[in-house]
Structure formats: C-alpha cells, structure tokens
Amino acid sequence: MRFSMFLFTACLAGSLTGQAQDVPKKQAEFKPGDVWLDTKGEVINAHGGGLLYDKGTYYWFGEKRGQSASEGVNVYSSKDLYNWKPEGMALAKSTDPGSEIAANGLMERPKVIYNPKTKKYVMWFHLELPGQGYNAARAGVAVSDKVTGPYTYQKSFRPNGHMSRDMTLYVDDDGSAYHVYSARDNYDLRLVKLTDDYLSATTQDTLLFSNHREAPALFKKDGQYFLITSGCTGWAPNRASLHTATSLFGPWKLVGDPMKGPMADKTFDGQSTYIQPVQGKKDAFIFIADRWNPKDLKDSRYLWLPISFTNNQPVVEWTDAWTTGVWKK
Image (cartoon, rainbow, N blue to C red; front, side):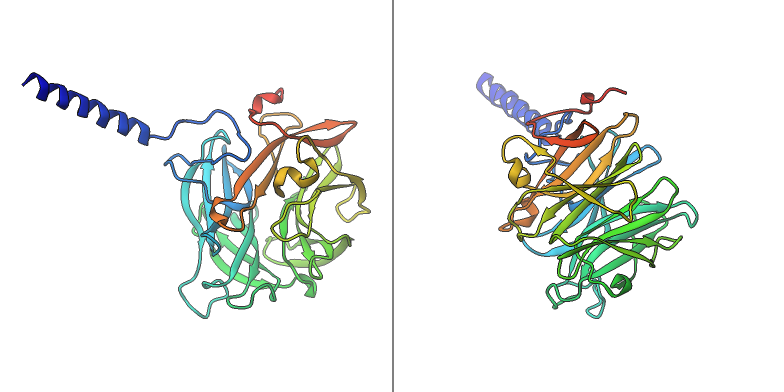
C-alpha cells in the first residue's frame, strides 16, 4: 500500500511537471539565431517578414514555409516584441487552381501598412505565379478591414512595367506610402510612390541604383533616410550595404557596410528584411533579418539586433542576447 501510494504520488508529480513543461516560458530577451517559440510553444513561422504597430500592439507578418513550399502569410501579435501570439493565417493560399495565389506559386516578403483614409489594412508581397518559377516577378496586393485578416487578394502587376521581386513598404511622415523593389532581374533597385489608397503604384517611379541588390530595409532618422540591402547570392549570406539620402527619390549615397562583429562580412549569416522602430523609445530601431536554411526553410532562424549610431550613421553590432533596455526613453 505504501509502495503503491509512492508510485501514485510520483506519477502525479511527474504529470504535473509535464504539464508545467508544456507551458512555454515567457521570454524577456532577444537571442538572435536561436529557435524562437510562440506563446503556444510552436516555432514561429514568419519569414521574410515585416512588422506593423497598431493600437498598442505589434503585428508580425511573414511567409509561412514548409520544408521548401510557400504556404501563405502568417501573422503574430505581441505587446512587448519578445512574446508572440499566433493569430493564424493572414492570407492563405487559394484552393482555386486558377488563382494567382494557388499552390505551387510563391508569396514572399509580405509587408502590411494601414491606410487611415480608407481604414483598410493593405498587404503587399512578392508574387510568383503557380508553376512559373521566378518568371512572373510581380507585386501582389491584398486588403482587410482587420489587422490580423483574413486578407482578400486583390491583384498583381509589375509596377510601371518593371519586374518586382524582393520588396518592402515604407510610410513617410506625411502619410505617403512607397514600394521599394528589386527590378531587372534584381540588378536594379527601384522606388515607387503608391496611390492614396495604397493599392496601386503611381508613375512616380525612380531607379535608386544598379548594384545587383535585394532585401531592402528602409528607415528614417533626423530627416535622413537609411537603406540596408543584401547582395544577390541565392540563399547564401553576403555583405550588407548601407545607402543614405535626404530624399526618398535620391540621390542615394553608398556609405559602406553597417554590420560589426563576428561574421559581419556575411551579415551574421543572415539577410535583411525589415527595420522596426520601437515605440516609446527615442532613436530606437531593430534590424530584422532571416538566417535562411535552404534545406528546411521552416527552420530558418530570425536575427533581431539593435541599431546604434556613430556620427549619425547606423551600426548593427552582433550580440548574443539583448533587451530593449539598451535604449533610454
């Protein structure tokens, strides 16, 4: 009886311990390159993504990936940037085999912005049509009344006839929105102003530079624009570059590599995707990159690193672990 009771107690304790282990530990710091779990204990699946801050909450949109397949766009929410709640699919693949966003196509680098005039959330992404590899090179657009979606696919096109692959969106201080995109088989990087509803490209479209660059990440500080890009070496990492300008339409000046630390010449084995301002902090920006794993894209890791400034130029220095406490309010 005593032995049986001991077994019962031990089993109960083990069961309770197992239950406790099933609850993900709340995170309080960033660990670049580590496995990052969401609040349900699942690996975050939001690659090539971007963030939107809306009504006190951050939303992270990114590619949902299988081992290699493009499976749509996931969205997560967070109050603190460390702990992310899965909100499901923002934009799913269509089950209609005739759709432009059906299976066997690509939906890459999704970015979402909010239009206060139309009260719509607008998503842009790099779209490749089903079964056509990388031949289409189009920009896709979807909209939603709710930040987490589901988003309704609208259309795809080549802005002013130009190829559109790796891309980002940027909303300036006056509310004007811009699409930055790789064109001419990624040899050109271009910028186009969007229409007032953010759903289409205007004819205000310019070549920023022709250096065979992709993965644009854009931000602004003290009236100066900063643009970090990657070279075009497939899934393999390469050296990042930084361009600066006082106008979005240029001229843009190449000022070098903003990375610092181990493997800085390979962007810490990663590739830029977005730069996120931190709410409530002065001159606080997070450099966001993907550490791609081409053998299992779902397992591609995330590199989030703080941006500092030296002589008003951004510096991204490697750190194994950090918090937003690195910035003063």
